[in-house]
Each structure stands twice: as C-alpha cells, then as structure tokens.
Amino acid sequence: MLRAATRVFLPTPASRHSLRHVRELSSAVVFTVHDQPGALRKALEFLEHSQVNLSSIRSKRSTEPNEFHIEIETSQPVQNLPASVRNILNGLQRRGMRASLAEVIPAESKATDAPWFPKKISDLDAFSSNCLQFGGQLDADHPGFHDEEYRLRRAKITENAMRYKHGQRLPSVDYTTAEQQTWGVVYEKLAALRPAHACREYNTAMRLLEQDGIFTPRAIPQLGDVSAYLSSATGFTLKPVMGLLSPRDFLNGLAFRVFHATQYIRHPSRPLYTPEPDVCHEMLGHAPMLCDAQFAQMSQEIGLSSLGATDEDIERLSRVYWFSVEFGLCREKGAGAADKEIRGFGAGVLSSFGELEHAHSGKPQLLDWDPETAARTNYPIEKYQPTYFVAKSFASATEKIRQFASTLERPFEVEFCPYSRSIKVLSREEKADRLACELKRT
Image (cartoon, rainbow, N blue to C red; front, top):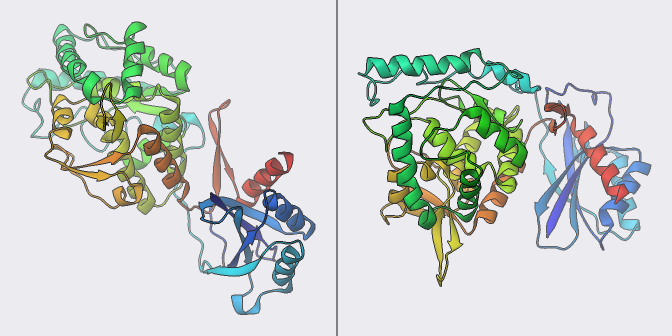
C-alpha cells in the first residue's frame, strides 16, 4: 500500500520565491490521515476551501491502508503554530479523518542554487564535445596508444560529434574492412553466449533487430539507422559523442530520451576488450535494451531526476546507473529450469564476452539488488567487476530504480513535453495543483 505525502503551503509575505531557490525560513508540519478510499480527495477539497496552496504530493510505502501524509509549510516556528494549522487538523478530524501531528521538517536557513541543466533538446549540443577522457586522445595503457594510424582514424570519426547539431542528419561512418572484421568477431562471440546469459527482453530485441536487418555480424550499423529504429520503438534517439561524458551531462541527456553514443570501434589487437565505450558497447549493449518500453521509461526517469540535482545526488544516481543499466543482473526462469537463472541486462555485461563469462563464473560477489546500497558502493572502471547486484526479476529491477529516482529532493519539479522535447520547470505548488486537479477528475 502506498502512503501519499502532500505538502501544503500557507502563504506568507515571504512565499514568493525563485524556482531556482529553496524557500527561506520555512517550517513544515506533517500529519497522517486515515480513511476509506477517497480520503485524499476529501482532504484536498477541504484544503482548497481553507485557502491553502499545495506545494507537493509524494507517495511513500506504508503498512496502513489509505494512509496519507500532508505537509504544511509556514514561516512561523513550530512552537507557535498558526491558528490555520490547528484549524486544518480540527477540520480533518471533524470529517471523520484521524489527523495528528506526526513529524516536523526543519526549516531551510538559506537559499541554494540548483546547477544549470538543459531545458531544450538543442541544449544537449553543448555536451557532445565536452568529454572527460578518450575521444580523439588515448591514455598510455590503451591498446591503440602506440598505433598512430588508429589514433588518426579515431580523431577523424570523433569530428562527427564535434560538428553535429540537433536537427541535422545523423552522421554516418564509412567503416574500413578491418573495423568490420573487429565488429564481426565481437558479434559472433556474444551471439554464442546470449541465449544462456542475456535476459529475455534483450534476446527479444536482438531477434527483432536482426530480423529487420538493422543488426548483422557483417556490417557495423549506422547511428542514424539504429536511432530511427529506437525512435519508432520507444521514442529514444541516439546522438554522437566524442568520448566519455561526465555523469551529469550523460544522465541529463536521458531526460530527453537521448542516448549519447560513440561511433569509433576498439583496437583490432584486442577485439574482446575495450577500456571505454565504443560502437560495439553502444550497439550490442545499450541499443537492444532501449527497445524495451519499460527500460526506456526507467532510463528517462533517471535522467529527469538528474536535472538540477546536487553533486551528491548525481554521484548516487551514477552509481545506481552503473550497477544496473551498465552491469545489472536479474533472475529469470529458463526453459525447463526448476530455479531461476541469473541473466544479464546491463550493457557492460551484454557487450563484453569476458565480463559476461566472469559474471557467471561464481567468482564475483553477488548481492541482492538494492539501489540504496548500490548508491553507496564503489566500483572499478578498467577491470572486471568484483561485485554485481542481482534483481529478483527484470521488472523488479526497473521498478526499484524508478522508486529510488523519485526519492531525490529538489526545490522544484520538472516535466518533459514529448511534443517539443523540452523541459518545463514547475514550482512545487504548481505541480501539486496539477495533481490535485487530476485527482478531482478521477
């Protein structure tokens, strides 16, 4: 059962505030309401008649049926609760609801600026060439570091991302015979492991991609073809990028259902290894999962939660993303199997022959999937993972991630408009008013 938390703002002279700031010198009172179905609607109607403004409505788990939490913000200190607060408590009680003071939320003492974030899909153009590492440059331990021809080739391919702007046709790459051969080696190796080690959603998407001629071991797919396919399936599109983005920039892109993807391929001397995302990782790891509607929705919700988030929350989100979207495992009942088998759904597992075998070798530590724990767990980047999180099912994995993303707090709310592919920023009051109107129409 869910417990809804409704925040009610009592207007004061200091109630008008910037969407980019947390309200100053405010206190909040929380009380619970128990009633039959429809209690929240009755409470909202009463609050409307009491001339108070809702600033947010949130849902939380509860063991009590039809239990709601309603927060009331006021500029008054808690020990001097205004008469309007007491009147609301009394009014709810008179209407057959058990209302009581349950919790006090400390006041904010100063304004806090939210980090800049993109509002329009064209704003993402600033990210494509803003890479943390790799791109046209290689670290000394990269397999292609001493290969001048390979370095020049990569630099030429990354120029696509540097020049690309939203609205233009996605750039294609005339891949060489050697590059196509590297792709073929990776493709065939992974194809042999997919049936036994990849989750059902991934195998289904791969089968469709192959049937429609988008994926084949003989040719590296072009970014534009895969992007168009994803767009028709789940609304996601691909955007070229020069290299590894910062966690904030990458997650912000997901809010617009945009996945930043590289176009260069790993060094041919080590076709089954790459220290960075490359076209094999993007296409054979991420693209198939983005064909799944549930996975796509979850990915966008992670992205929306990252907009304007604090650096600390970005770090937590990026770790949750790493242990799920990149290296997530889930349990799935196989054909004729009595017990559920462990299957991969993370792109870092599904696009790496070695990682896929390692994850199923019995050597790494396997933990039950818990986003809160994952958000506190460190991980290595350039070696096989020592720890994986295993969800009870693919569906439970995505649901827990969505729940985690919804718990991150900001002094505003955001909405994505799929028609203009833009972000609308709403104050908590505006968001709550919309939800209240929707409840009244139901």
